[in-house]
Length: 192
Length: 205
Figure 1 (cartoon, chains in turn blue, red):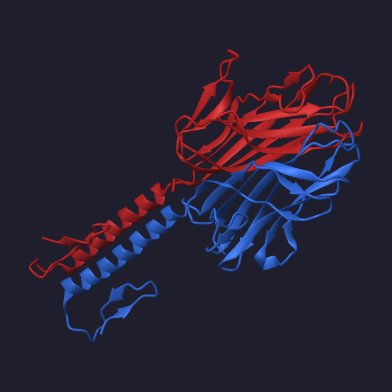
Figure 2: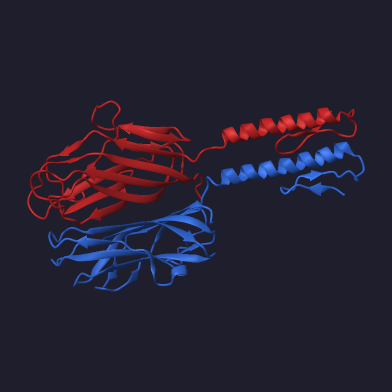
């Protein structure tokens, strides 16, 4: 009747039959398996779930209205985070801390009102409250300059299947549209 | 003749061996010691690098949006886990480079920063934009539509992106542009700029 250390290494008890070769083999094999698993874990940490998508087709946004951005091109996805058929959602199935970046170009317009454009990172775990929502001002003049909004944050995925979306909004008095845009996400750490 | 474990080749005796308990334990202990020391010393670090440009870049002509300048770099602040490759730019200035090509393929987190002091004369800028370029195409743009006042000091723009690089020909560059509401833009200087890369995954699905 052998015993085991907390890591699972097998060792004989005084009451066990004397079988030194077998007992040494058990111990060596247990350590071997454990060390190999730990090494694989260390190496796997260098390969984190990551994805990047983009789109360029114009997406109309009315004044003071939320529009969830759509994505058309899956440039990179090593973890099945994005599905083309669900063009607005990233579904994250591995808990942990993630770095999220997105940017979008709000088109220039003929209005001279000083206004703001906004991107919001929205998580299904947060409801409608944004994870992060910076704003960018739009100059009164010249009106030929587009506004490129960039958003970046660390976010902890705490629920398996949590979804992340990007919402665009502006308060220009005239309709605007989002054109070139991209979204990327990568895990940087395990869940606490 | 001792046998060895399948993964790490740790020795253990077989029944046919001459009984040598102290010797067998010593050989296992020494094999473990050597292996763990070797593993500890050789676990690969996550590849990461930061390059920095320190020489001021003076722009003396109007640089409208979309036609800003790609910025040169001349210093490598740190470089872990991977040798780097840089492409020398068009200006024959030894040690200065415009395009950075990581030598390992993978998905990278990239952060770019650009600092510009407030011009001492002339019209204030109403737009500052930082772009990260992959193979000369913008993969992230961040514009600040602000009007620095006379009391503003150095302003720093930044952009971040996740992007796959093929490890051979793909190159990254950092671009900055500025504009004013009307008329020309007086001379201004871009000072420190950085480009930081961290490889998050080596695979291409």
